[in-house]
Structure formats: structure tokens, C-alpha cells
Image (cartoon, rainbow, N blue to C red; front, side):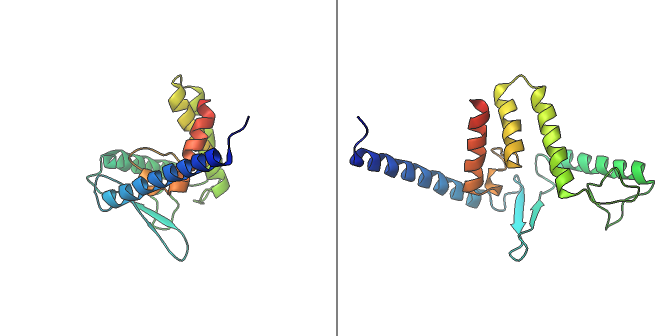
Length: 166
């Protein structure tokens, strides 16, 4: 025999209350991390929706980011025989003889290929699931960056992660 209407209603209310608690906790996290130099911050242009991420020099990953940027600059110089200028793309299409921004489609393909290659070489089921979840949703969610995403994004991440863990 199925659940009564009253039991179904209680279960639904419990799910809604749980979702509300998670969203309130997420909102508190966003407020707590606002302006904290230990975390990456974002600004969203209200007209275009473009996102700008910023990281302080004191951020734990700042040195790694500097080294990555230097590597991208070296790649550009090797490929095009000159230093990049202010209008040159950071991520360029390697098939072109002149600096050309990589198309969004090509960037997604590169990201997906990189994630799948990494996932296929990893024995840890949780890490493998995280990489494949990132491929599904288009971002990598961690404890240190979750304040940059909406509660809806976090739900999508958790759903994708659950799919790859089961």
C-alpha cells in the first residue's frame, strides 16, 4: 500500500525545508567570503552577464596562477615569434598562423578532452567522478570556490557527481 496523502505532504515539506536550509547556508557562505583575500571573487556585469574573476596576490593559488600565465605567454611567443600584445587572446587557436581566439566550442572540446583523459587515468572513484561531473556541468566545484556558484549550480554539480558515483 502506498503512502497516504498526509505522509507524502510531510515528506515534501521536509525536502523543501532541507533545500531551504542548504540555500540559506550557501547565502551565508557567500557573505562570509565576500572581500576575503583568501578566496577568488567575481563580478558580474549586469548588462552583459560577463563574469570577471579576481584573485589577490595573497591567495594560496596565486603563485600557481602566475606560473600558468607565464607558461601561456611562453606558448604564445613560441607559436607566433613575438610577445603577446594587449589585444591578443590568452587562449589561442593553435591551428591559425595569426593569434586568433579559440572558439567557445573548441574551448569546451579541449576542456572535455582534458577532463576525460585525466579521469581515465585515475583509480580514485571520487576524483574520477568529480572530473566527469565537471565535464557534464562545465565547471569544477570545490570547497574553496563554491561561493562563486549559485545554489542551483551546486545542485547540478551534486546531481552529476551522484550519477558518476553510482
